[in-house]
Amino acid sequence: MKATGVLGGIVGMILTTGCVNNLLEQNPKGELSKGMFWKTEEDAVYAINGAYASIRPYFSYEHFMDCMTDIAWARSAGTARNLINASFNPGSNGFGELWKGLYGGINRANYVIDGVNEMLPAAKPAVVPGLERVLGEARFLRALCYFRLITMWGDVPYIEKTVYDKSEVERLYRTPVAEIKDKILADLTYAYGKLPPRISAEESGRASRVAALAFRGKVQLYWASWNKFGWPELDGFVPDPDAATAAYTAAAADFREVINDYGLNLFRNGAPGEPGAPGKCDKLPNYFYLFTPQFETPAINSEIIFAFAYSGPNMGQGSNLMNDIGNRSTENSQSILCPTMDLVNCYQLVSTGDFAPELIPMNGNQPGAREAENSAVNPASYEGRDYRCRATVLWDYEVMNKLVSQKNDGTATWLYKASAPYIQASAMETGYVPRKWVRDQSMGCARGDTPQDYYLMRLADVFLMYAEATNFLHGPQPDAIDLVNRVRARGGLPALGSECTADAEAFFKAIEQERKVELVLEGQRYFDIRRWRKFEEVWGPAGGQGRIIRNTWGEVRRTDFKSYDDLARQRYYIMQIPQSERDLNPNLTQNTPWL
Image 1 (cartoon, rainbow, N blue to C red):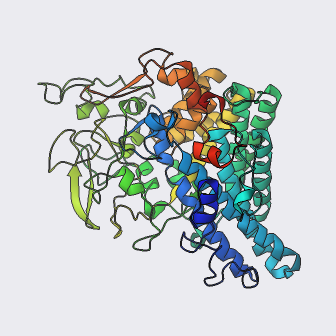
Image 2 (image 1 turned 90 degrees about the vertical axis):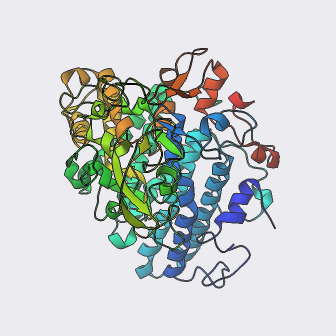
Protein backbone atom coordinates (compact mmCIF):
# COMPACT_ATOMS: atom_id res chain seq x y z
CA MET A 1 0.00 0.00 0.00
CA LYS A 2 1.43 3.38 -0.95
CA ALA A 3 1.07 6.01 1.75
CA THR A 4 1.00 9.76 1.19
CA GLY A 5 1.50 12.99 3.12
CA VAL A 6 2.75 12.82 6.71
CA LEU A 7 1.66 9.20 6.68
CA GLY A 8 3.91 8.66 3.66
CA GLY A 9 6.86 9.79 5.69
CA ILE A 10 5.75 7.77 8.69
CA VAL A 11 4.75 4.47 7.13
CA GLY A 12 6.31 4.37 3.70
CA MET A 13 9.85 5.46 4.50
CA ILE A 14 10.80 6.03 8.07
CA LEU A 15 9.94 2.85 9.91
CA THR A 16 13.01 1.37 8.29
CA THR A 17 16.58 0.62 9.07
CA GLY A 18 18.68 2.31 6.44
CA CYS A 19 15.53 2.85 4.30
CA VAL A 20 15.49 -0.84 3.35
CA ASN A 21 12.89 -2.79 5.31
CA ASN A 22 9.38 -1.58 6.06
CA LEU A 23 9.10 -2.72 9.64
CA LEU A 24 5.33 -2.59 9.48
CA GLU A 25 5.22 -5.26 6.81
CA GLN A 26 8.26 -7.49 7.38
CA ASN A 27 10.28 -9.15 10.11
CA PRO A 28 13.84 -9.26 8.87
CA LYS A 29 16.59 -10.16 11.33
CA GLY A 30 15.76 -8.85 14.80
CA GLU A 31 12.83 -6.78 13.55
CA LEU A 32 9.61 -5.31 14.73
CA SER A 33 7.28 -8.04 15.93
CA LYS A 34 7.11 -7.51 19.67
CA GLY A 35 7.34 -11.23 20.21
CA MET A 36 10.67 -11.27 18.39
CA PHE A 37 12.07 -7.76 18.86
CA TRP A 38 12.73 -5.42 21.79
CA LYS A 39 14.23 -8.24 23.83
CA THR A 40 17.85 -7.16 24.17
CA GLU A 41 19.99 -4.06 24.35
CA GLU A 42 21.31 -5.02 20.91
CA ASP A 43 17.75 -4.72 19.56
CA ALA A 44 17.54 -1.19 20.95
CA VAL A 45 20.90 -0.22 19.42
CA TYR A 46 19.82 -1.71 16.09
CA ALA A 47 16.66 0.38 16.20
CA ILE A 48 18.41 3.65 17.07
CA ASN A 49 20.91 3.10 14.28
CA GLY A 50 17.95 2.84 11.93
CA ALA A 51 16.61 6.13 13.31
CA TYR A 52 19.90 7.92 12.65
CA ALA A 53 20.02 6.55 9.10
CA SER A 54 16.42 7.54 8.42
CA ILE A 55 16.66 11.07 9.81
CA ARG A 56 20.06 12.18 8.53
CA PRO A 57 19.00 12.81 4.90
CA TYR A 58 16.71 15.60 6.11
CA PHE A 59 19.59 17.45 7.74
CA SER A 60 22.10 16.97 4.93
CA TYR A 61 21.01 19.77 2.62
CA GLU A 62 21.52 22.62 5.06
CA HIS A 63 24.03 24.22 2.68
CA PHE A 64 21.18 25.01 0.29
CA MET A 65 19.55 27.16 2.96
CA ASP A 66 22.30 29.71 2.33
CA CYS A 67 20.92 30.14 -1.18
CA MET A 68 17.94 31.96 0.34
CA THR A 69 20.36 34.62 1.56
CA ASP A 70 22.94 37.06 0.25
CA ILE A 71 25.95 34.74 0.48
CA ALA A 72 25.21 31.87 -1.94
CA TRP A 73 23.45 31.19 -5.23
CA ALA A 74 21.85 27.95 -6.44
CA ARG A 75 21.24 27.04 -10.07
CA SER A 76 19.23 23.85 -9.78
CA ALA A 77 15.52 23.25 -9.46
CA GLY A 78 14.17 20.80 -6.94
CA THR A 79 12.53 20.77 -3.53
CA ALA A 80 15.65 21.63 -1.55
CA ARG A 81 17.30 23.79 -4.19
CA ASN A 82 14.92 25.99 -6.13
CA LEU A 83 14.55 28.04 -3.03
CA ILE A 84 13.86 31.65 -3.88
CA ASN A 85 11.69 30.87 -6.89
CA ALA A 86 9.66 28.00 -5.45
CA SER A 87 9.50 28.25 -1.71
CA PHE A 88 7.98 31.71 -1.52
CA ASN A 89 5.29 31.24 -4.14
CA PRO A 90 1.87 29.72 -3.47
CA GLY A 91 1.14 26.50 -5.27
CA SER A 92 4.75 25.32 -5.17
CA ASN A 93 5.78 22.23 -3.28
CA GLY A 94 8.34 24.35 -1.45
CA PHE A 95 9.60 22.35 1.46
CA GLY A 96 6.78 19.82 1.47
CA GLU A 97 9.14 16.85 1.21
CA LEU A 98 11.13 18.14 4.15
CA TRP A 99 7.92 18.39 6.20
CA LYS A 100 7.05 14.77 5.41
CA GLY A 101 10.59 13.58 6.02
CA LEU A 102 10.84 15.28 9.39
CA TYR A 103 7.57 13.74 10.52
CA GLY A 104 8.81 10.40 9.32
CA GLY A 105 11.91 10.95 11.43
CA ILE A 106 9.79 11.80 14.44
CA ASN A 107 7.81 8.61 14.02
CA ARG A 108 11.01 6.61 13.73
CA ALA A 109 12.30 8.21 16.94
CA ASN A 110 8.94 7.58 18.65
CA TYR A 111 9.14 3.94 17.62
CA VAL A 112 12.45 3.63 19.46
CA ILE A 113 11.16 5.59 22.46
CA ASP A 114 8.07 3.39 22.77
CA GLY A 115 10.09 0.21 22.41
CA VAL A 116 12.71 1.11 24.99
CA ASN A 117 10.12 2.37 27.46
CA GLU A 118 8.42 -1.03 27.27
CA MET A 119 11.72 -2.77 27.93
CA LEU A 120 12.89 -0.69 30.88
CA PRO A 121 10.53 -1.89 33.66
CA ALA A 122 11.69 -5.50 33.30
CA ALA A 123 15.29 -4.78 32.30
CA LYS A 124 18.17 -6.05 34.41
CA PRO A 125 20.08 -3.27 36.19
CA ALA A 126 23.20 -3.94 34.13
CA VAL A 127 21.50 -3.06 30.85
CA VAL A 128 19.44 -0.10 32.07
CA PRO A 129 22.17 2.52 31.38
CA GLY A 130 22.54 1.26 27.81
CA LEU A 131 18.80 1.35 27.24
CA GLU A 132 18.53 4.82 28.74
CA ARG A 133 21.30 5.98 26.44
CA VAL A 134 19.35 4.75 23.43
CA LEU A 135 16.25 6.45 24.79
CA GLY A 136 18.23 9.67 25.20
CA GLU A 137 19.46 9.43 21.60
CA ALA A 138 15.93 8.90 20.30
CA ARG A 139 14.65 11.89 22.23
CA PHE A 140 17.60 13.95 20.96
CA LEU A 141 16.70 13.06 17.37
CA ARG A 142 13.04 13.83 17.95
CA ALA A 143 14.06 17.21 19.35
CA LEU A 144 16.14 17.98 16.25
CA CYS A 145 13.21 17.20 13.97
CA TYR A 146 10.74 19.32 15.93
CA PHE A 147 13.20 22.18 16.22
CA ARG A 148 13.56 22.33 12.44
CA LEU A 149 9.77 22.12 12.02
CA ILE A 150 9.02 25.04 14.34
CA THR A 151 11.81 27.22 12.92
CA MET A 152 10.22 26.93 9.49
CA TRP A 153 6.50 26.55 10.14
CA GLY A 154 5.85 27.77 13.69
CA ASP A 155 2.89 25.88 15.14
CA VAL A 156 2.87 22.27 13.90
CA PRO A 157 1.17 19.03 14.97
CA TYR A 158 2.92 17.31 17.87
CA ILE A 159 3.08 13.51 17.84
CA GLU A 160 4.75 11.72 20.74
CA LYS A 161 3.93 8.07 20.11
CA THR A 162 4.39 5.72 17.20
CA VAL A 163 1.73 6.12 14.53
CA TYR A 164 0.59 3.01 12.66
CA ASP A 165 -2.82 4.03 11.40
CA LYS A 166 -3.62 6.74 8.88
CA SER A 167 -6.60 7.95 10.90
CA GLU A 168 -4.30 8.96 13.76
CA VAL A 169 -2.74 11.75 11.72
CA GLU A 170 -5.85 12.85 9.85
CA ARG A 171 -7.35 14.56 12.88
CA LEU A 172 -4.33 16.34 14.36
CA TYR A 173 -4.37 20.04 15.12
CA ARG A 174 -1.39 22.38 15.18
CA THR A 175 0.22 22.66 18.61
CA PRO A 176 1.33 26.15 19.75
CA VAL A 177 5.05 26.74 19.26
CA ALA A 178 5.58 27.54 22.95
CA GLU A 179 4.27 24.12 23.96
CA ILE A 180 6.45 22.35 21.39
CA LYS A 181 9.48 24.35 22.53
CA ASP A 182 8.96 23.08 26.06
CA LYS A 183 8.73 19.50 24.82
CA ILE A 184 11.92 19.93 22.78
CA LEU A 185 13.73 21.24 25.84
CA ALA A 186 12.41 18.33 27.90
CA ASP A 187 13.75 15.84 25.34
CA LEU A 188 17.15 17.52 25.27
CA THR A 189 17.29 17.70 29.05
CA TYR A 190 16.59 13.97 29.28
CA ALA A 191 19.29 13.31 26.69
CA TYR A 192 21.70 15.51 28.63
CA GLY A 193 21.17 13.34 31.70
CA LYS A 194 21.58 9.97 29.96
CA LEU A 195 24.16 10.37 27.21
CA PRO A 196 27.94 10.05 27.64
CA PRO A 197 29.78 13.38 27.91
CA ARG A 198 31.53 12.84 24.57
CA ILE A 199 31.73 10.00 22.07
CA SER A 200 34.58 7.76 21.03
CA ALA A 201 35.98 7.43 17.52
CA GLU A 202 34.09 4.15 17.12
CA GLU A 203 30.79 5.90 17.87
CA SER A 204 31.05 8.68 15.28
CA GLY A 205 27.64 10.09 14.49
CA ARG A 206 26.03 9.29 17.83
CA ALA A 207 24.75 12.01 20.13
CA SER A 208 26.50 12.98 23.35
CA ARG A 209 25.70 14.98 26.46
CA VAL A 210 27.57 18.00 25.13
CA ALA A 211 25.59 17.82 21.88
CA ALA A 212 22.29 17.79 23.77
CA LEU A 213 23.48 20.73 25.84
CA ALA A 214 24.57 22.76 22.81
CA PHE A 215 21.27 22.21 21.04
CA ARG A 216 19.33 23.01 24.21
CA GLY A 217 21.17 26.33 24.29
CA LYS A 218 20.40 26.92 20.62
CA VAL A 219 16.68 26.27 21.12
CA GLN A 220 16.67 28.76 23.98
CA LEU A 221 18.55 31.29 21.86
CA TYR A 222 15.97 31.03 19.08
CA TRP A 223 13.15 31.32 21.59
CA ALA A 224 14.80 34.44 22.99
CA SER A 225 15.17 35.88 19.47
CA TRP A 226 11.51 35.33 18.60
CA ASN A 227 10.45 36.99 21.84
CA LYS A 228 12.86 39.90 21.44
CA PHE A 229 12.34 40.65 17.75
CA GLY A 230 8.83 39.26 17.29
CA TRP A 231 7.27 36.82 14.85
CA PRO A 232 4.12 38.60 13.61
CA GLU A 233 3.61 36.13 10.75
CA LEU A 234 2.83 33.39 13.27
CA ASP A 235 -0.79 33.78 14.36
CA GLY A 236 -1.23 33.97 18.11
CA PHE A 237 2.42 34.46 18.94
CA VAL A 238 2.91 37.38 21.33
CA PRO A 239 6.53 38.33 22.04
CA ASP A 240 7.41 38.63 25.71
CA PRO A 241 10.51 40.64 26.73
CA ASP A 242 10.71 38.77 30.04
CA ALA A 243 10.63 35.43 28.22
CA ALA A 244 13.42 36.69 25.96
CA THR A 245 15.59 37.61 28.96
CA ALA A 246 14.97 34.26 30.63
CA ALA A 247 15.76 32.36 27.43
CA TYR A 248 18.95 34.33 26.72
CA THR A 249 20.02 33.61 30.30
CA ALA A 250 19.34 29.88 29.95
CA ALA A 251 21.07 29.75 26.57
CA ALA A 252 24.16 31.51 27.89
CA ALA A 253 24.36 29.07 30.81
CA ASP A 254 24.19 26.05 28.49
CA PHE A 255 26.77 27.47 26.09
CA ARG A 256 29.07 28.37 28.99
CA GLU A 257 29.01 24.77 30.18
CA VAL A 258 29.74 23.49 26.66
CA ILE A 259 32.71 25.85 26.39
CA ASN A 260 34.19 25.25 29.84
CA ASP A 261 33.36 21.74 31.02
CA TYR A 262 34.05 19.23 28.24
CA GLY A 263 37.62 19.83 27.14
CA LEU A 264 36.61 21.06 23.69
CA ASN A 265 38.80 23.22 21.49
CA LEU A 266 38.76 24.72 18.04
CA PHE A 267 40.35 22.61 15.31
CA ARG A 268 44.15 22.67 15.63
CA ASN A 269 43.75 24.92 18.67
CA GLY A 270 42.25 27.62 16.50
CA ALA A 271 45.57 28.30 14.75
CA PRO A 272 45.08 29.76 11.26
CA GLY A 273 47.71 27.59 9.62
CA GLU A 274 49.49 28.74 6.50
CA PRO A 275 47.57 30.69 3.88
CA GLY A 276 49.62 29.15 1.09
CA ALA A 277 50.84 30.81 -2.06
CA PRO A 278 48.33 32.27 -4.54
CA GLY A 279 47.60 29.90 -7.40
CA LYS A 280 48.72 26.83 -5.46
CA CYS A 281 46.95 24.35 -3.20
CA ASP A 282 49.76 22.37 -1.57
CA LYS A 283 49.20 24.37 1.62
CA LEU A 284 45.84 25.77 2.64
CA PRO A 285 44.54 27.36 5.85
CA ASN A 286 43.47 25.07 8.67
CA TYR A 287 39.88 26.12 8.13
CA PHE A 288 39.88 24.22 4.83
CA TYR A 289 41.00 20.95 6.43
CA LEU A 290 38.32 21.25 9.12
CA PHE A 291 35.78 20.37 6.42
CA THR A 292 37.52 17.28 5.02
CA PRO A 293 36.80 13.64 5.90
CA GLN A 294 40.17 12.97 7.49
CA PHE A 295 39.42 15.45 10.30
CA GLU A 296 35.68 15.03 10.76
CA THR A 297 35.50 12.72 13.78
CA PRO A 298 34.62 14.41 17.10
CA ALA A 299 36.98 12.05 18.95
CA ILE A 300 39.99 13.51 17.10
CA ASN A 301 38.54 16.95 16.38
CA SER A 302 36.63 18.20 19.38
CA GLU A 303 35.32 21.25 17.51
CA ILE A 304 32.72 18.93 15.94
CA ILE A 305 30.06 18.63 18.62
CA PHE A 306 27.48 16.77 16.55
CA ALA A 307 27.48 15.50 12.99
CA PHE A 308 25.48 12.95 11.06
CA ALA A 309 27.95 10.28 10.03
CA TYR A 310 28.45 9.10 6.47
CA SER A 311 30.63 6.20 5.36
CA GLY A 312 32.42 5.18 2.23
CA PRO A 313 33.42 4.05 -0.19
CA ASN A 314 30.95 1.77 -1.92
CA MET A 315 28.84 1.09 1.17
CA GLY A 316 25.68 2.87 0.07
CA GLN A 317 26.07 5.18 3.06
CA GLY A 318 27.78 8.18 1.45
CA SER A 319 26.34 11.68 1.20
CA ASN A 320 25.69 13.85 -1.86
CA LEU A 321 27.64 16.83 -0.51
CA MET A 322 30.52 16.52 -2.97
CA ASN A 323 28.13 16.35 -5.90
CA ASP A 324 26.36 19.53 -4.78
CA ILE A 325 29.41 21.65 -4.02
CA GLY A 326 32.26 20.19 -6.09
CA ASN A 327 32.93 20.95 -9.75
CA ARG A 328 33.60 18.94 -12.91
CA SER A 329 37.27 18.53 -11.95
CA THR A 330 36.33 16.94 -8.63
CA GLU A 331 34.66 13.65 -9.48
CA ASN A 332 32.57 15.32 -12.23
CA SER A 333 30.44 17.02 -9.58
CA GLN A 334 27.62 19.39 -10.46
CA SER A 335 28.55 22.67 -8.71
CA ILE A 336 24.93 23.32 -7.87
CA LEU A 337 25.66 26.28 -5.63
CA CYS A 338 28.21 29.08 -5.71
CA PRO A 339 29.41 31.77 -3.32
CA THR A 340 28.41 35.33 -4.18
CA MET A 341 30.45 38.52 -4.41
CA ASP A 342 28.47 39.74 -1.39
CA LEU A 343 30.10 36.97 0.61
CA VAL A 344 33.60 37.63 -0.72
CA ASN A 345 33.26 41.31 0.17
CA CYS A 346 32.66 40.27 3.77
CA TYR A 347 36.17 38.90 4.23
CA GLN A 348 38.31 41.42 6.08
CA LEU A 349 42.02 42.23 5.79
CA VAL A 350 44.45 40.35 8.03
CA SER A 351 46.63 43.44 8.29
CA THR A 352 44.06 45.73 9.87
CA GLY A 353 40.87 43.74 10.49
CA ASP A 354 39.00 46.27 8.38
CA PHE A 355 36.93 45.45 5.32
CA ALA A 356 38.83 45.44 2.05
CA PRO A 357 37.66 47.84 -0.67
CA GLU A 358 34.63 46.37 -2.41
CA LEU A 359 35.42 44.36 -5.49
CA ILE A 360 34.65 45.99 -8.82
CA PRO A 361 33.10 43.64 -11.41
CA MET A 362 34.89 43.84 -14.74
CA ASN A 363 34.67 41.98 -18.03
CA GLY A 364 37.64 39.64 -18.02
CA ASN A 365 38.23 40.26 -21.73
CA GLN A 366 38.45 44.01 -21.23
CA PRO A 367 42.05 45.26 -21.60
CA GLY A 368 43.57 45.95 -18.20
CA ALA A 369 40.71 44.38 -16.23
CA ARG A 370 42.90 41.65 -14.75
CA GLU A 371 45.43 44.19 -13.49
CA ALA A 372 43.03 46.92 -12.33
CA GLU A 373 43.02 47.76 -8.65
CA ASN A 374 40.17 46.02 -6.76
CA SER A 375 38.98 44.36 -9.96
CA ALA A 376 36.99 41.22 -9.26
CA VAL A 377 38.90 39.43 -12.04
CA ASN A 378 42.31 40.47 -10.72
CA PRO A 379 43.73 37.75 -8.42
CA ALA A 380 45.73 40.38 -6.54
CA SER A 381 42.45 41.89 -5.28
CA TYR A 382 41.99 38.87 -3.00
CA GLU A 383 45.41 38.90 -1.38
CA GLY A 384 45.66 39.70 2.31
CA ARG A 385 42.09 38.73 3.14
CA ASP A 386 40.81 36.55 5.97
CA TYR A 387 42.33 33.09 5.45
CA ARG A 388 38.83 31.63 5.48
CA CYS A 389 38.18 33.33 2.15
CA ARG A 390 40.84 31.23 0.43
CA ALA A 391 39.67 28.12 2.27
CA THR A 392 36.07 28.68 1.12
CA VAL A 393 36.16 30.22 -2.37
CA LEU A 394 38.01 29.81 -5.66
CA TRP A 395 38.47 32.97 -7.71
CA ASP A 396 40.24 33.34 -11.06
CA TYR A 397 43.55 31.46 -11.26
CA GLU A 398 43.08 29.69 -7.94
CA VAL A 399 44.00 26.00 -7.98
CA MET A 400 42.60 22.85 -6.38
CA ASN A 401 43.40 19.15 -6.46
CA LYS A 402 41.67 17.20 -9.22
CA LEU A 403 39.79 14.00 -8.42
CA VAL A 404 39.00 11.90 -11.48
CA SER A 405 37.63 8.35 -11.65
CA GLN A 406 38.06 7.98 -7.91
CA LYS A 407 41.74 8.89 -7.82
CA ASN A 408 43.91 11.98 -7.53
CA ASP A 409 44.84 13.46 -10.90
CA GLY A 410 47.04 16.48 -10.37
CA THR A 411 45.62 19.98 -10.01
CA ALA A 412 43.15 22.15 -11.88
CA THR A 413 42.85 25.93 -12.22
CA TRP A 414 39.65 27.96 -12.06
CA LEU A 415 39.09 30.72 -14.63
CA TYR A 416 35.56 31.99 -15.05
CA LYS A 417 34.14 31.60 -18.57
CA ALA A 418 37.20 29.70 -19.77
CA SER A 419 37.07 26.32 -21.48
CA ALA A 420 39.16 23.24 -20.74
CA PRO A 421 41.78 22.64 -19.43
CA TYR A 422 40.45 25.08 -16.84
CA ILE A 423 37.96 23.83 -14.25
CA GLN A 424 34.49 23.41 -15.70
CA ALA A 425 31.56 24.06 -13.39
CA SER A 426 27.95 23.51 -14.34
CA ALA A 427 26.77 26.64 -12.59
CA MET A 428 29.49 29.11 -13.64
CA GLU A 429 27.20 31.96 -12.67
CA THR A 430 28.79 34.12 -9.97
CA GLY A 431 32.41 33.85 -11.07
CA TYR A 432 33.27 31.79 -8.01
CA VAL A 433 33.13 28.12 -7.10
CA PRO A 434 33.40 26.66 -3.59
CA ARG A 435 36.49 25.13 -2.05
CA LYS A 436 34.96 24.53 1.38
CA TRP A 437 33.55 21.00 1.79
CA VAL A 438 35.31 19.83 -1.42
CA ARG A 439 37.62 17.05 -0.35
CA ASP A 440 41.20 17.10 -1.61
CA GLN A 441 41.68 13.32 -1.39
CA SER A 442 39.86 10.87 -3.59
CA MET A 443 39.37 8.15 -0.96
CA GLY A 444 38.00 5.94 -3.74
CA CYS A 445 34.61 7.63 -3.64
CA ALA A 446 32.31 8.82 -6.39
CA ARG A 447 30.65 12.24 -6.23
CA GLY A 448 27.47 10.94 -4.60
CA ASP A 449 29.28 8.67 -2.17
CA THR A 450 31.02 11.22 0.02
CA PRO A 451 32.32 9.93 3.36
CA GLN A 452 32.22 13.46 4.78
CA ASP A 453 30.18 13.73 7.98
CA TYR A 454 27.60 16.51 7.93
CA TYR A 455 28.18 18.98 10.77
CA LEU A 456 25.18 20.32 12.63
CA MET A 457 26.94 21.81 15.64
CA ARG A 458 30.48 23.14 15.95
CA LEU A 459 32.27 24.78 18.87
CA ALA A 460 32.85 27.96 16.83
CA ASP A 461 29.08 28.30 16.46
CA VAL A 462 28.68 27.87 20.22
CA PHE A 463 31.28 30.61 20.82
CA LEU A 464 29.32 33.00 18.64
CA MET A 465 25.92 32.04 20.07
CA TYR A 466 27.25 32.55 23.60
CA ALA A 467 28.54 35.98 22.62
CA GLU A 468 25.15 36.83 21.12
CA ALA A 469 23.19 35.72 24.18
CA THR A 470 25.37 37.54 26.70
CA ASN A 471 25.50 40.65 24.53
CA PHE A 472 21.74 40.96 24.48
CA LEU A 473 21.71 40.50 28.24
CA HIS A 474 24.64 42.65 29.35
CA GLY A 475 26.33 44.18 26.33
CA PRO A 476 29.89 43.24 25.32
CA GLN A 477 31.53 41.07 27.98
CA PRO A 478 35.26 40.29 28.16
CA ASP A 479 34.81 36.52 27.86
CA ALA A 480 32.46 36.89 24.89
CA ILE A 481 34.80 39.31 23.14
CA ASP A 482 37.64 36.84 23.67
CA LEU A 483 35.59 34.01 22.10
CA VAL A 484 34.76 36.07 19.01
CA ASN A 485 38.43 36.98 18.70
CA ARG A 486 39.36 33.29 18.89
CA VAL A 487 37.07 32.61 15.93
CA ARG A 488 38.59 35.56 14.06
CA ALA A 489 42.11 34.37 14.82
CA ARG A 490 41.60 31.20 12.77
CA GLY A 491 41.23 33.52 9.78
CA GLY A 492 44.49 35.28 10.63
CA LEU A 493 42.57 38.40 11.68
CA PRO A 494 43.53 40.70 14.54
CA ALA A 495 41.31 41.14 17.57
CA LEU A 496 38.26 43.36 17.29
CA GLY A 497 38.96 47.05 17.62
CA SER A 498 37.39 49.10 20.38
CA GLU A 499 34.84 50.51 17.96
CA CYS A 500 33.46 46.98 17.49
CA THR A 501 32.97 46.42 21.21
CA ALA A 502 31.86 49.90 22.23
CA ASP A 503 28.27 48.87 22.88
CA ALA A 504 25.78 46.06 22.30
CA GLU A 505 24.82 47.25 18.82
CA ALA A 506 28.41 47.42 17.59
CA PHE A 507 29.30 44.05 19.08
CA PHE A 508 26.21 42.45 17.60
CA LYS A 509 27.31 43.62 14.13
CA ALA A 510 30.71 42.02 14.76
CA ILE A 511 29.03 38.76 15.79
CA GLU A 512 26.82 38.78 12.70
CA GLN A 513 29.88 39.39 10.51
CA GLU A 514 31.68 36.40 12.03
CA ARG A 515 28.64 34.16 11.61
CA LYS A 516 28.51 34.99 7.90
CA VAL A 517 32.09 34.04 7.10
CA GLU A 518 32.57 31.28 9.68
CA LEU A 519 29.35 29.35 9.04
CA VAL A 520 28.90 29.86 5.29
CA LEU A 521 27.55 26.79 3.44
CA GLU A 522 26.36 25.35 6.76
CA GLY A 523 22.81 26.69 6.54
CA GLN A 524 22.87 29.16 9.44
CA ARG A 525 22.52 32.49 7.64
CA TYR A 526 18.93 31.96 6.51
CA PHE A 527 17.70 31.26 10.02
CA ASP A 528 19.76 34.13 11.45
CA ILE A 529 18.14 36.60 9.04
CA ARG A 530 14.69 35.36 10.00
CA ARG A 531 15.12 35.31 13.77
CA TRP A 532 16.81 38.73 13.78
CA ARG A 533 14.13 40.21 11.46
CA LYS A 534 16.69 41.43 8.92
CA PHE A 535 14.77 40.89 5.70
CA GLU A 536 14.72 44.56 4.71
CA GLU A 537 18.38 44.98 5.58
CA VAL A 538 19.34 42.12 3.26
CA TRP A 539 16.83 42.56 0.43
CA GLY A 540 16.22 46.29 0.58
CA PRO A 541 12.98 48.24 1.06
CA ALA A 542 9.62 47.18 -0.33
CA GLY A 543 9.15 48.14 -3.96
CA GLY A 544 12.89 48.55 -4.46
CA GLN A 545 15.28 46.75 -6.78
CA GLY A 546 15.83 43.86 -4.37
CA ARG A 547 19.24 42.25 -4.21
CA ILE A 548 20.98 42.00 -7.55
CA ILE A 549 23.37 39.08 -7.80
CA ARG A 550 26.12 39.98 -10.28
CA ASN A 551 28.99 37.84 -11.43
CA THR A 552 32.60 38.97 -11.37
CA TRP A 553 32.16 40.29 -14.91
CA GLY A 554 29.33 42.57 -13.81
CA GLU A 555 26.52 40.62 -15.47
CA VAL A 556 23.24 40.27 -13.57
CA ARG A 557 22.68 36.63 -12.75
CA ARG A 558 19.63 36.94 -10.54
CA THR A 559 17.54 39.57 -8.84
CA ASP A 560 15.82 38.47 -5.65
CA PHE A 561 12.71 40.18 -4.28
CA LYS A 562 12.62 42.94 -6.86
CA SER A 563 9.66 45.27 -6.23
CA TYR A 564 8.49 42.92 -3.50
CA ASP A 565 5.36 43.70 -1.54
CA ASP A 566 4.69 43.12 2.14
CA LEU A 567 3.19 39.71 1.46
CA ALA A 568 6.44 38.48 -0.08
CA ARG A 569 8.33 39.70 2.96
CA GLN A 570 5.96 37.90 5.30
CA ARG A 571 6.38 34.66 3.37
CA TYR A 572 10.12 34.82 3.90
CA TYR A 573 9.57 34.62 7.64
CA ILE A 574 7.30 31.58 7.72
CA MET A 575 6.75 28.66 5.36
CA GLN A 576 3.43 27.51 3.97
CA ILE A 577 1.89 24.37 5.42
CA PRO A 578 2.09 21.96 2.46
CA GLN A 579 -1.27 21.84 0.71
CA SER A 580 -0.98 18.08 0.31
CA GLU A 581 -0.97 17.81 4.10
CA ARG A 582 -4.00 20.07 4.42
CA ASP A 583 -5.83 17.99 1.84
CA LEU A 584 -5.27 14.94 4.04
CA ASN A 585 -6.12 16.71 7.27
CA PRO A 586 -8.68 19.54 7.21
CA ASN A 587 -7.73 20.44 10.80
CA LEU A 588 -4.41 21.88 9.62
CA THR A 589 -4.79 25.63 9.37
CA GLN A 590 -2.59 27.60 6.98
CA ASN A 591 -0.10 30.28 8.02
CA THR A 592 -1.75 33.63 7.34
CA PRO A 593 0.68 34.95 4.69
CA TRP A 594 -0.15 31.91 2.57
CA LEU A 595 -3.95 32.17 2.67
